[in-house]
Image 1 (cartoon, rainbow, N blue to C red):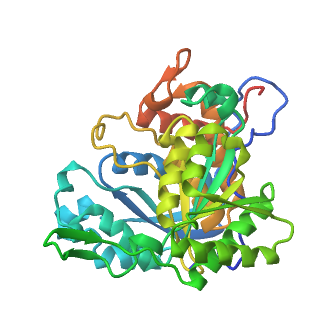
Image 2 (cartoon, rainbow, N blue to C red):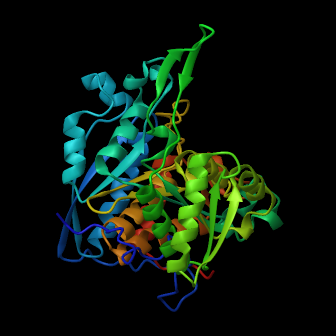
Length: 406
């Protein structure tokens, strides 16, 4: 298996960030100077999990972008498409077939589209598409979820926040992914002393779980702007009290990183009030789930944001943070950019292929510079396109990475 990123605190690369492409040709106008595909010198296997709703559409587009970016850097991919989520339920009766998990474990990286939909909402918990996602994360042992939220200059007017609040926001949420209330036991249903039905879950963290995610976050903050905010609810929850204690202890290993603490309710408020105060945020599973979605809307659309889920060894899982959007599935309306940028994270964090990752990042920026927008990020004066055409425009930028004057 090709080497994938090891989260042994020394191997984490600089966080994802879109920067303008340097001009490589002398003329300021767009020039077709496509590079020929390089002779493959590296080969990787990628498991594709299209899933449900818009998942197959965005994965189809992203696969083409990944193939082209790789070919220009001498990389050859072999793809294996496997069912997961609602699609797997319909096909096999379970949300994560054993064959799918096995294929994922054997791959060099996994690219996931989206799962879930109205069709399966009333299923019992073990037969919900979302259960398959939790099982996949647990099976792959990916405990660190990286969710960047960057307000691109081209999309600052798409944010629901005032321009002076949203402009310049560039933060990373590091979410613990395999512990906490989503996995804690005991959990289930019962009857209380009054004879009423009850449902219960347990928020529980062990020292090693906190320590390893804290080190990941400190490493990322060190390579960003050197500021880490740990978010908890230590004024109420014992699990958060231990969280704060351990993060504070780990901070002694990183004297170059400024650590602060914030209660989750205040953090939610501050993200809306003044998001530029944040550089890197580390938090538990459920708080990270909520806060990263909130942060995504600062950028203008959840359809723009990728994520990476990484473990200490083995393949990483890369996916957009948006849902399956069943209301627009099959209508060519989906924004594929979050998935395309997830492919860039796959190259950077999963395979260590920085040049190919930058090709994709720059291609997305170039496509936006040229005014192409899907409906979720559209504004007057730009060109409204669908999922397929957006993918085609990104392909053009990958193949001809010379930009007009920026």
